[in-house]
Amino acid sequence: MSAAGKITSMMRISSLKKLVTDSMAIDMGTANTIIAVKGRDIVLDEPSVIAVNELSGEITAYGRDAHDLLGREGRDITVLAPLNGGVVADFERTKKMLAHFVRKSKSGGSQMSLQAVMSMLGDVTHVEQRALLNAAEDAHIGRVFMMEEGLAAAFGAGVVPRDKRASAVIDFGAGTTNIAIVARGNVVHSRSERIGSNEINLALANHLRRHRGLQVGEETTETIKTTFATGFMPDDVSKSIVVRGRDVQTGSPGAVEITTGEIYPVVEGIIRRIAQVISDTLTELRPEVASDIYDRGIILTGGGALLDGIDQYLRNFVNLPVTIADEPRYATVHGLLSMFDEPELLEKVSRNEFHFLQNSEIPFEA
Ligand SMILES: Nc1ncnc2c1ncn2[C@@H]1O[C@H](COP(=O)(O)OP(=O)(O)OP(=O)(O)O)[C@@H](O)[C@H]1O
Ligand SMILES: [Mg+2]
Image (cartoon, rainbow, N blue to C red; front, side):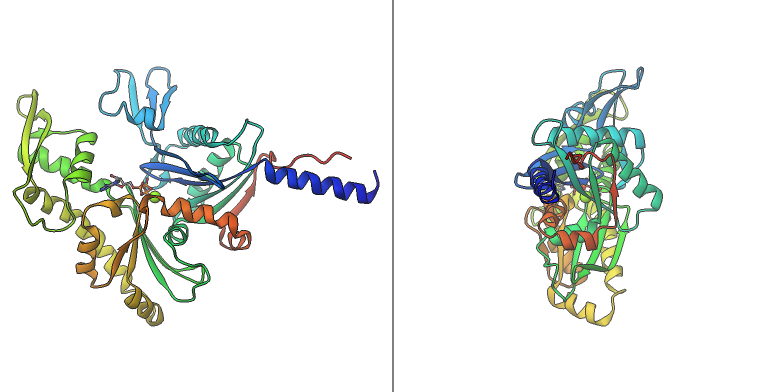
């Protein structure tokens, strides 16, 4: 084949590659894994859990199917979360879970090649980063870009990458709270604490067990938190609901009635700790950055931002404007996805790029 012919044929192959390449954004969090694909937006939103048969070690269910078993598992089945505080706690199972979710999210047949951008915490260690990348390798992703979570959350929350003034974005997740101060598409300051919205569930369960003599499961504390608890002092402290569980004394099924007034201090104990971290971080800023944040206030993202009145609580605590991003749970994945429209920015912000199993390379044939 002539040189010109070769070039034409290469061009054809490269445009063909574009057609058959899925561009995937993956936000693998402590509680949820969310995947979006370019052109299709969110394609997967499932709990980051698996069900394991204790006898065989085999994984029997993933994601939502596994989560549905939680609290009512069969005798030999354990439901576990292989990620803890946003990091890979159980490497082998994280790999399998990610591979399963990626397979489920692919557009076409298994031949579809893949590039992905994944988020990771700003303070992950080299070992933790390797573990995530290896997990991606197992999922047969051709190219993996890793991007700092705070930056992704900021872009997804509407921060413009070219904006020279600073914005403060808080990702209040299940296991971590990440504060990122972003200017001109860079993280100028960040802090991440391994305390998240799940702490509220633990505090509620503790309170009910110790003060009301009732043991409750995860599903119950989640319902209390998402439908009844408030992040600000309720006007009506006598509003009540009945909570069911297991009586600590007798071991029998039991129920107690709780009020908003009883629950508020339990929730407040946790959000005060988070508010304190945010407030401390805001004292660490350089004057110009502080002045931008003083004007603009802070933006909340992550599932924890959905707690009723959390914005009001933080507004009072830090004395700054506080807004909640649109679809706060999807801010990070939307930020990651937007990188495919800005390849140069992706190149600049990606903390690492690895070429794994070269399934993104369609061999050139003369
Ligand atoms: N309506 C709601 N009210 C209060 N909390 C909520 C609500 N909806 C979700 N949450 C909480 O948000 C958390 C999940 O948020 P998110 O999906 O952002 O976490 P994650 O990304 O998995 O965790 P991390 O970023 O810490 O690894 C859970 O703790 C969940 O209980
Ligand atoms: Mg998250």
